[in-house]
Length: 338
Image (cartoon, rainbow, N blue to C red; front, side):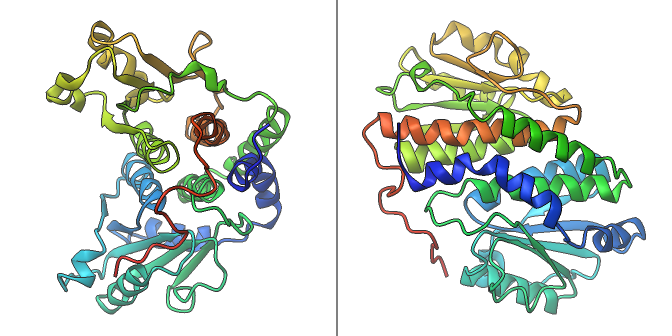
């Protein structure tokens, strides 16, 4: 049995979601009113690392369900380039587990000065941004001490999904989150097998589309920081435009298929790749795949189910490789980039 702090935090995801249901008092309806009353015409996200993977996820669901163009703004555009914008019709969302990164603090401040409505999603009730941002969304994940973020990523996705559904006045999302929580608690003993993947091969791709591509970015990041494996994320369509030239039998391919139109096209898009390597691993809700996750009635919640399976697996897999997932090489909890 692997004993580690990050594993404990990853395994706590079902109970964190269960607790969230009863204590979540975030101002979803205030944001919904702004958007439904056409006060917001587009969204800008500011984040780094795992939080930026969540921001990428948001850009897809904001566009798909709300018709709002969403741009992930590199903090350096403001902190280094000193660029100026008319943000009078923008919602700027800062996503940060710690809420302490100096460049994100600066981006929120400058965005508000440029007319933006600002919103913070964080797990830190003492973040300096809370006193500045117009709206504060609490992840309610309890303190995350590990360097590698796990439960805070899942909680960010949950907030984003709930926000999108409530903007559409689909209050049933609350019932579906409760059902999801009960399922995850009951399913917590069913863990993915670390023996499915060859740990001696350290290069490959993870292919997804839609929200699956955002998840692929986060999964790729965890392979790098915890396992020292260069598993690169690509759209299963984009990989055919050149990157497939790298593929050979000593190359892992993970195919991540979600249950939406984009996700269901992944297997079809990637069919040719099966000719180039035998090291294929399917992450999907199909019964005959390597990494199975149980599908929800609301397909967006599949992302929560999938990541609650992936995080404990990647920690155990890192340990199997002889690495310490609690102390990833060179990394610290709060990274200073400004």
